[in-house]
Image 1 (spheres, rainbow, N blue to C red):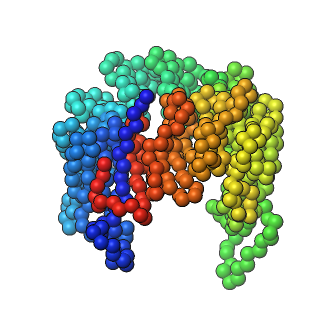
Image 2 (image 1 turned 120 degrees about the horizontal axis):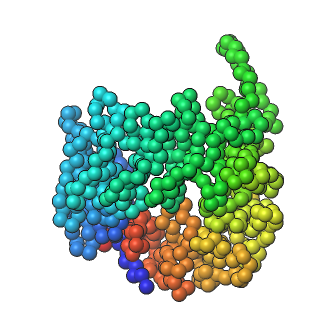
Image 3 (image 1 turned 90 degrees about the vertical axis):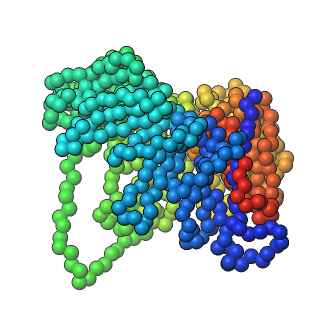
Length: 588
């Protein structure tokens, strides 16, 4: 079982002594300091932080950033340092030392610090570089000839071994995952080539043609291939007509479509770029533009002697939004099937958002149309929308819900969609093939909406916590606990927290690494935050692989986890309390 070790930071109280109680006044407030910008290395061995006053105007002394290793109890002071960042799995630190304000001729200096022996390297070049979280490689480029910046030299350097790879006349270089190969465009002057090259090996030419003009490329999410665009002549460089795919590491490519041969829906034209493929490489969702002429409004000379603005409550678009620059019709989305050679329009100009699953294989999407409710946007934070379900193979559009307060969310596998009906206060599972709705929250037996809601609009849902890796299970929140629902209908619903939250008056929530995280790791366990709704105590719990909850910390304070190490064994967090006495300056 993974051992969880915590490194944490405490909100500090400046230089106020605890030997005797002292009445708080404005003078005391000015002395208070807090920990700012805490950062933890990828391996969890090092942290950086500095102190700032609650009122920033009292930060008059030069900033001191602390570099601290809690296991070895090593602490280094870095003066006048800004933007410290760990890289290379926590083995290196990059930081910038600011130049003194009094010295107008001095410039900021960038350093790389190897943490195992504190070896410091000064970056003496006038151009910047990119570092990577999981590698000692850094990359940078610069013009081969400053008088002709068109051609650039690209360098990949291992700062640990000081070995370098130098490539001339390359563009759009992408260092692939694992940092063992790159994809790039080679500029030969009159033509360009798309290439793939292992860092230790011979380059592979993916595409090269002296008669055709290579424009750009994009990689698939798994980086095992991608797409690129080519123009048959210079007049088509802004909108290349040929669309290719390629595979890695073989470097083989094939022509997918010549956009000039495609029959697009009437009055629409494509916008070419290296789109990613979906549906196992059989579909392209691309942007389109209308070719209908739009009459230009004749501009009359403004009469400033008298100005009057009239509008009515039921204007579709308020006068404020009708002003120049405040309202513009959106473009459309088109779907092209590479097997059937059929292109269909999937959104109209009124539809502002196309919602597709995160995965690669899907046949349906949702679109939102807020046009009927734009007149409310001047006094509402967010306006409602009509939701449409679209078949991406045929372009058939069905009105799913009118005047909806919420948006649907797809499961990671694209088989199901979930939608919260704010008026009915229930969660529905949507089968995109039949548009059938199934109430999945009624089996929970408790409200899934904000029970303390007191605003003049429908109560919001407590929300979706996340999904299982296969996308067949979703985890929903009620006020206290987390509930696992099998969307296939084969397994009964159960409480992931075993009802412990409701029993003890605690609210449990998944502690995500990133706000956009969706996949919950049931097999290896994950972290949760807890809030005691009676006394507001906060804590951190771990959901273990055996399905049990383990309390890691909890007490009369608030806890905010700032960052976790890659292996999830370390975290850095701030803890605040009005009651607990804390020794100033201590971190452990």
